[in-house]
Every structure is written in C-alpha cells, then in structure tokens.
Length: 412
Image 1 (cartoon, one colour):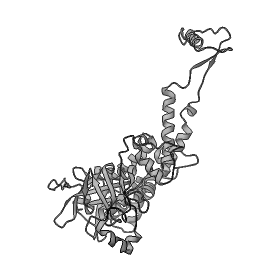
Image 2 (cartoon, rainbow, N blue to C red):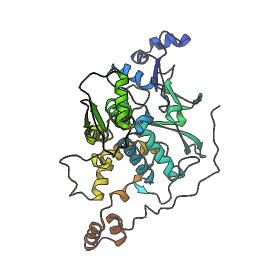
Image 3 (spheres, rainbow, N blue to C red):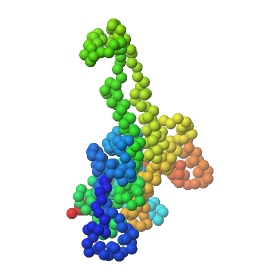
C-alpha cells in the first residue's frame, strides 16, 4: 500500500458542499488531507510500499535494505511462522453459538463461508493474509432472503485500493481491480493499525530492520559458498608478482592432481587455508534473527526450532505448548479478528467461535486422570469425556456439502 496525498477537502473538490463543510463543527474537527492507499504486490521488486511508509514515519533507508515479501518468505523462520499460523487456523473448526448455546447445525456462513473453496482453505488464507499483509478483505457475494451474508470472497490485499470518502472523511471507500465496492459488502479487519490509518500492518511490515538482517545473513552465507569465497590453498611468494606471473605460478601448481605431491620453488610457500564453517554461515547471527522473528510474531522461539540458551521444555507437555501458542499468538492476533468478522455478519444473537480443544488436549495419561476424577465426582460420562478431551467430535464433525445455488454479484 502506498500513500498519495490528494489535496485538502476544504480547498479542492468540494464545490457546493464546501460551505456546509466549513460550518459543520464535526467537519472542521475532522479536517484531514484526503489520502489514498494502494496495496502494491510485494512479489514484484518495485519498492514503493516500504519506502513511502518509512518516509511517513520519518525513517531512512540508508542503513538497511527493505526486503520484499518474496525475499522475507525465503527466510526459514518466517516461512515456518507464517505457515504454522495459517495452517493451524485453517485446521480449526468454527462453531456457531446462539444465546450462549452451541447450535447443532451451524449456518452455512460459519461451516463453509468461502465461495468456490472449503472451510480449511478459507480460514487458512485469511490467516495467511493477516500474517503477511496485516489485514484481510472479505467481499459478500451472496445474501439470503433476510439480507444476511451467505457467501464470502477473500480478496487479495494487493489488489484492493482504499481511500477516504470525499463527503465524509471518516468513512472508507474500497475498489477491487478498478471496480468500486459497496462498503456494506466489505469486511476489512487488521492485525495492527495506526489510529487514523487506512490500512493495516503486520509483523512483516513493521519489523523491517530485523527482517532485513535475516535476509542479508542468509544471502551472504549462500553467496560465500556459491562464489568459492574460501580458497583451498594460498601460495605465498616473497616478491611482488605481476598478474601474469601470479597466474603462471597458479597454473604450475594446478598442473598436477590434487592428491599428488607438489613442489614449491623459488621461495614459494604453500599455506593450507581453513575456514570456520560457523563463521562462514553467520550461524549465531541467523539464530538471533530466528529468535527476533519469533518475537515479532509473538511466538516462543522453540516453535520455530530456534534454540535459546537457558530455556527448558522439560515440564511442558504438548498440550501446554499449544495452549500457550493459542493464548499468546493465535487467539488475540488471528482468531479474534476472524471471529469478530464472522459474528458481525451473523444475526445479532449468534456468534462464531473457533474450537481449539483439539490442540490443547493433554496427553493420554492426563486425560485418563481427569476423566477418572470427574467420574468420581459423579459427572455424566459423556460430559466428563468431553471435558477431558477424550473422543472429541471436533475432529470428525461433518461439514455440509457446498451450496452451489448462490448468485455472485459482480460490481458493475
């Protein structure tokens, strides 16, 4: 997304509404410069997005290079963080709750919200958009007889244009591929957004310096070995040699096979050159980068296979680790924005909530102990099994077949 000033609404383009705008106290309080933000495709190399954002924040590009999304996704820690988050969200089941009671049959918007896609792809791609772009856009393509959303289309953020409404500069207008969208049909939620900003931002947009260091370290290590930066042997001569003399000496040395006896004459000394593999690949720097990336995404470093000195997982089981991941990473940053987005499209008494019990389920022994304790407390067996996480139906919950009898409303 880029920021392009379009002039002051008080001085440009208001014509007949100018007087009313000047006399309106609210309008005077909201006197803003009309801004337009366009999301550029980060898979291309034009640097307009990052450069303009940095200029707005008063930052300079002189000390580090802002990597593109494609370069950042080439860093193993970033790739693992993004895919782990998006695939975990995609594997969750969303449930519908009405008046605090779980519905036996969820609305189609909850069980299968995406058009031309299943629930896994829709939730996964939405979380991927949040993790990589810091925002997502849902466009309502079909409604039921009551006017409620029935099918959604996830829009690529790079193709969506957002700007302030000229008549009411607190409202946003949306365009997709050059076509104006009704704002009532657009659900736009963000990972993080500066107060008054048009677009959202995520870890990949806000932590550019740390990501630049990670990208440069990986590329430096690759270039080192690709270009043969470490010679196998160094020939040292007591006198200064011209370029031709040095080349002739090297060729004489290479005339014999590598494993045969070589003779150095004329004061030439052969020195074996050994490199430190850890230093050559900047391993310490890359470990630190992986830890920084985990911090940016709000994850524990061990989730990205980034070992930290002094850390211990001895007293954590699998359920506890995933419980911590859901509480600190998935729930506040990804699940809540998606759940609120769906709930706003449902009837007022109905909300959508992801079921995370499958990932926080304890080991078999702990499940058995909890189940026995509940049975001894005279809890119903079915309820005790559900609380203990034994035989949960979440993993096998049937998903309704796709409903192809919907209409797709393409903006004119």
